[in-house]
Amino acid sequence: MVKILHSADWQVGLRAQHVARVASDVRKARLEAARKVIREANSLSVNAVVLAGDIFEDNFVEDRLVHEVLAVLADSRAPVYVLPGNHDALTPDAIYRRPSWKQRPSHVFMLDGDSAVPVPRTSAVLLPAPLRQKKGMKDPTAEWAARVDPADIRIGVAHGSLRIEGKYSADDFPIALNAVARSGLDYLALGHWHGQYLHDARTAYSGAHETTKFGEDGSGQALLVEIVARGAEPRLTPVVTGSLAWRVLELDLSQGTGPEVERVRALAAVLPHPERTLLRLRTTGTSADDATSLLNGLEDALWGRGFLHVSVERNDIPRDKAEGRLADIAGSSSLISSLLRELGGPAVPASQAPEEAAVRLAARQVLTELVMEAWK
Image (cartoon, rainbow, N blue to C red; front, side, top):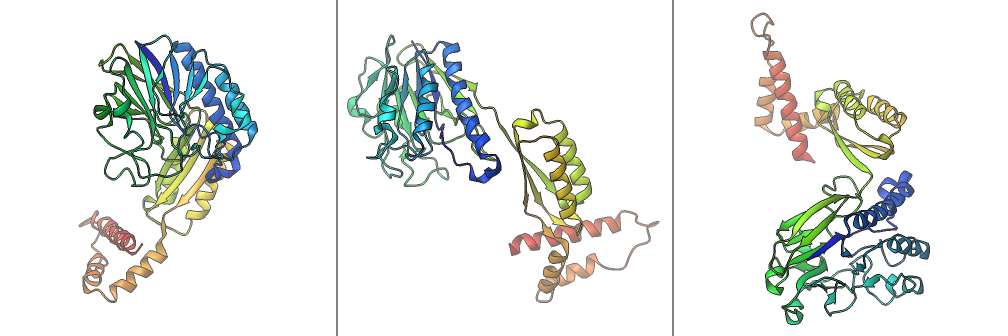
């Protein structure tokens, strides 16, 4: 039987330039989430904490952060195993070669070699695949088959991208989808993808312990992994570790900026813990002349509610610009020209067809947006 807490991608020292105004808050949250990982590990009485790469943002972070991470790891009651990832690769100038890191507590171990590492007081071994460079085209798990001991529960620890079409690049340490079967593993603990992802019953990314950016679904977690015996299917349980919420709220300005602003204002009003929430307002559609002032007012109001971060991402197109472009295209397209004539044709008395004017306006709006989307 073995029970581990699998985590990865702490990236302590993250620059967070995309939210520069609150970058220091984001960095503090990453350290707090690291403390939460260790607290959860202690609470769950795990046999080991396994960190599958990228504990640091890069090999140039200040020694102060090295000491802070070691202080966090010192509180673990279980042994901690640290794998070098691509951000903190085992290069000649690696953090893991510094005197500061070498002062680590005796229960913090490096997975920096090729040999299987036994987990004390269990029948499990860890098979490490440390990275020694930022990018690479070789599968870091490719050599495990030759050094597997058939007697023990076998847990691979690697950092890279599963070779799933559309989700990896050739220089991103692509990992074969049959790595578990090829090496006779009971579980493959992966790092590199920030969203928690269970590829199958034996292969999983724990996800980053704290969310890094907007749109990073599934992060802010670790994975509790329990394996009762060699060959048994692991029991995988998500463990919440993150503290910040990164929320994107969409505004379709084609529906009218005023109504959309009020809708988003109402949504934001019920979000819990604004002081720990980063908000991005993303606009789409075509917008009227008053859009900028209304959006500025909304942004100011949300800052006033105490949100940690508020930003507006403008993807809408001003209506006069859209209409002008549509007119230009109509001059060289008989199809567009005829559609516009039809949609802007003689008015129908409201008493006879009260919906037709609205339908024509909506159709013209759709046509405008389709043309503008193609133009972009």
